[in-house]
Image (cartoon, rainbow, N blue to C red; front, side, top):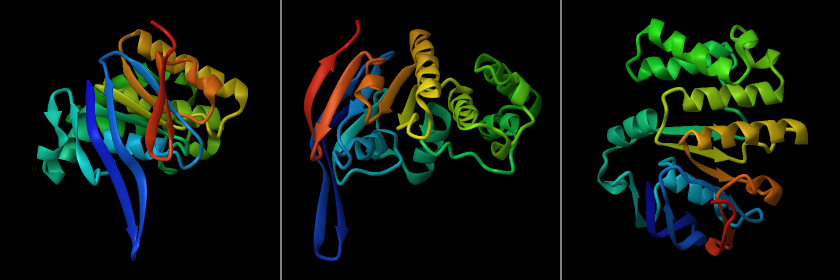
Amino acid sequence: MIKGTNITRVYKKGSVETHALRGVDIEIKKGEFVAIVGKSGAGKSTLLYQLSLLDTPTTGTIHIDNTDIATLSIKERTNFRLNYLGYVFQDYALLPELTAEESVLLPLMMQGYTTEDARKRADEVLTRLELSHRTTWRPSQLSGGEQQRVSVARAIAHTPLILFADEPTANLDSVTSKQLLEYLEELNQAGQTIVMVTHELEYAQHAHRIIEMSDGSIIKETRHKK
């Protein structure tokens, strides 16, 4: 599903260069649940941003579902992200003026769904995530765990090729974190490919494979589940 070869990312500020990624090679198979771990500054979120088309590597190649990302125009990259990828962030990234239902159906309408079909699909996914009683609530009315579940619903409503999750439990308590990870595991068992960044090794145990990073490089890989 994903193949990255010799990925580097260099940030420049004046004459100072920061090498966030140093020649990373990575492959992720369809239906796999991969956790990327490491200390702060290891490069794990930077790698996820390259793989998920939220940033562009300085050098190297990335193929997603046999598509060479470098060949896509800016508009094509935007459409690729919208139609084929899903994102869950640690800060939820919900618009404060939108209800839970609106947060999920808006991207669907941008993808071409009719209002009726988008609303039906949004309600289906929110119900699956036990949020049917919160469809008309706005982020300020929701708990942190509920906000994160809305963001998961938004990310998976269009059945993306890959779900990217960047520290999805960072702002949640341990009980809510466990519940969220169980939702992700259920999605994966149903066939969803997931790439998750976490600094908690305990949470990484939910994945099939754990990739450990340090100083912009992959230093270890552990296969945790079949």
